[in-house]
Length: 310
Image: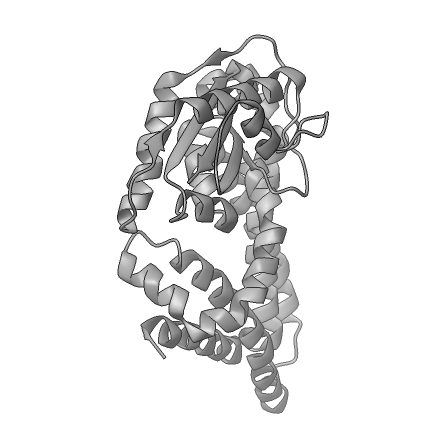
């Protein structure tokens, strides 16, 4: 049992203790109140951002925090008033109060397990190598991995929409605004190569070498997706990345592809690194060469393809 194991166990026990202190009724109400307030902020942003930014472009960089805070505060205040009215109407006799406290341990444990599962996943992405290494070796994290994967699948679509980044996952395709007006961005391609190699350096891996053939494959696929309005490893004709590589004369023993669709390079890179499968491709020891193709569609966003090979 390492330090990450101890931390996760203590986090779970702390949540159970808080559940006992609050009691089942108050604990569940508090949990619902906070969750509803956070979701309200996210929904306010995701459902109004396009219209607001179109009318007030100056708010583009500020609308995310403003809408999240506004939605959270309004819903939190309303639910707090309702909670106070409900708690005042609750019988507080000692026997019932004690039973309520004991019952609070159960939802506390459930919340603790959920928090520990999410925390374990986040710790694997730590910029401190010693922490990420211990998280990957953690026995408790391994036990919680099925729960963290479930949480990730449920949360990812919300976060992708909220934070303006979509990743290729083979399960759903985001709406792509097709356009004939786009430009290739060699400057952003170079910046992304630097970001990718910085991530590999943190893990003690050799930097990826820029490959012109792979870059041409990446640029062609990014351009095609933006021009025809789709987002997938497979073209509408059913051509996968390996077919496209071979067609371009690329030889390899092992290859892979990452796709991202975002408003900025930073958001795209952050999204890729926060996705286990995309992060694994970037940090794959077998890959030695990469081609990055970034096409800028203006308001349609950045379409990004990363092609890897050994």
